[in-house]
Every structure is written in structure tokens, then in C-alpha cells.
Image (cartoon, rainbow, N blue to C red; front, top):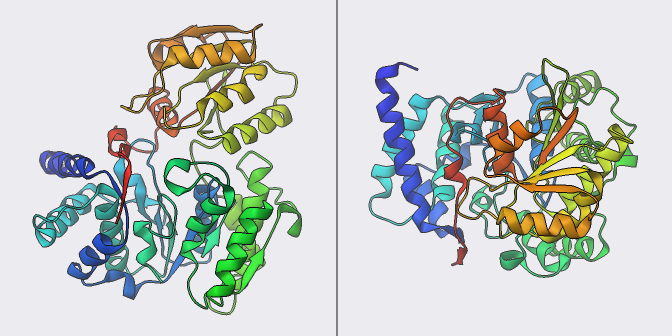
Length: 423
């Protein structure tokens, strides 16, 4: 982009930062109103809507890669971003240009007037408008928080798995959480899920029956393993099975050959999820968000599978509103050296409290509190294997520090939000 336009981009980002004061809403009134002001771009698009606790982003990335390999022009809407806001809105895996962010912010800001709107609601309609203007053949659409009242649910569905996360807003049982996420189920539209928790599955089945939506339940064993899948972790085989089942259901509307499907899966890319980086000196650094208990269990299994016998150095930072005590309990036995760090967020958990939890979980480990991720990386230079985990915020910072960022601008603060308001 022309450097002369950079101040305009900075101004657009500052406007988006300003929307954070409105927090996060549970409700569809705002996005519907703003989308109407934008000409209801969602009516000119077709979607695959993806919800769940873990695996949403990976499943979205797989579906996007498959349909792009089939020659479609594919929009991808995900959150949060690792480094730059533009990661959230992509067409054929190309970030929305800065010039388009500037233009859409100006257009939608003028249309919205002085009405209160959250960052996520605004970004949702930005994405819809951009995808419609780009004549996308298909949009892979990830929910933000929940599903039923999530801003993304204005579109006309795939549920990965259900676990405990965002309990203060979605509910304190898996059944309640599943019911919220199943809110993306549309009347008569097929729904695919990889959920295997009985109470969660019962909630999804109930809503699918109520809406006369054909339900397909899949597991990793429903398809042969995908040998060329470049994403680490046995859980990715489940996500791949979910993507494959979705593609199969849609064959009559969007036919895709088996070779094309395999090529799409073989070339899928999703940074920050069990992403292995090997530095020039041979040190290996594994990056993984693992921001809830399900994610921590997945990381533990992956370490035992791919690095059996190794005792990596752990660098861990977490958000205060996550279940970090149980995350620490699960990860503590895996390492001999553990560094706790603050996350660059107002919601960061106290690194000293994290350290106490790790010492309790593994009294034999060497646990230190570091003032920053950079300091922790410096303290780990001699370690052959380092694992950075606990928050996608921390993973994004690591990608920047390691020079492996998928974007150029640090805008992680745009991921900040406060408690949702129920409308």
C-alpha cells in the first residue's frame, strides 16, 4: 500500500479501537440494522457457518482450502486475529487490503451515524460487504462468541465440538453451552457436528429436530486418516472428518472431486495451532493457543505423541477469565522448566499466580516468573524444545517476536472486549 495512505489506515484502526468501549453484545438487532444500511450484502452470498468450542478455526481453514482448490472464490471470516485486524477478513487467503479497510470503515461509519455498535458487529458487516463486492462464490463464516445470538448468525451450519469455555455467558453446563452454539442451526439446512459429549449432543439433536434440519454426526474414524494433513494433532483428523462430511453433504450444490479435496487438505494453513517453528540453530518452538481445558488436553496429547520423552521448556501466559488453574494443572507435569509471563491484555492473569499453580502441579519443576515473553524467550535460548501456550494473544506476540507473523502490523489490542450485554 502507498505509504501516503498509512495515516488513513491508522485512523481507521483507531476508530475500530474506539468501538471496544461498547464491549460485546448478545443480540442480532445491531448487525441486522447495520447490514440493512449496507444493502444487506449477506443476501448475495452463500455461507458455511461454523460454531463450536475448539477446532472452529482449523475446520474453517480446511473448508476454505478445499473449496479454493476447487476453483471457487472463497471468503474467510474468523476471529480473533493473531497480529493484524486484516487477518479476520480474507478472500482466497489474501488479507483484506488496508485501502479496503479504510474505505469500508468510512462508508459504514457514515451509514451507522451515532448509533452504538461493537467492534465485532462492525467487523461482521465489513466482512459481509467486502465478500459481496468481491463476488465470493462461498464464505466460510466462523462464529464469534456462542452462536444463537452471535452477530454472525444473521446469515442464512457446522458445529465442531463442545467444551467448557465462556461459561459466564454461555452457561455452566455442556448442555447449555451446546444449546447456545446450536443457535446457528437454520430451518431445513443440514447441520454437521463432531460433538461426542452426550449432553451436548442431546441439545444439538433437540434443536435440529425442532428446526427440521438434517443432522450428521461424525468422528475421526468416519474417514481414513488424511496422511498429508500438515496440521499437527490427532484432533485435526476429527476436524478433517468434519470438513469432509460437510463437503460430501454439499456435493449436489458444490461438486468437488476427491483429488481436489485431498489437495485442499494437504495445503491447509492455520498459524498458531500446534505450529512448529525450527530456528536456524536447531531449536524447536511449538506455538499453540490452548486457552481452555480442552485445548490444554489436546496440547498435552500432542506433546506425548510427537515429542515422547521430551521435557520441553514451557512459556505460559493466560487470560484471567479463562480456567487457567486447570490449564496449569494439565500442563505442569510436562516440563522441567516453566516460565510464566503476562499477556499483553488488560485481562491478563497474574504471572505470579500462574507460577503458584504450576508449582502446585509439579513441585519438582523449575518455575520462574518473567516480566515479558521476550524475557522468557531469552531465558530459554539453550532449550532444544520450547512450548509457548495459554493464549492466542501470547501466540500472536510470539509470531511477531520470532519474525513469523502472517501480518505486518501489531493490532492485537483490537481483540479486547468486555462482558457481553444481552439484548
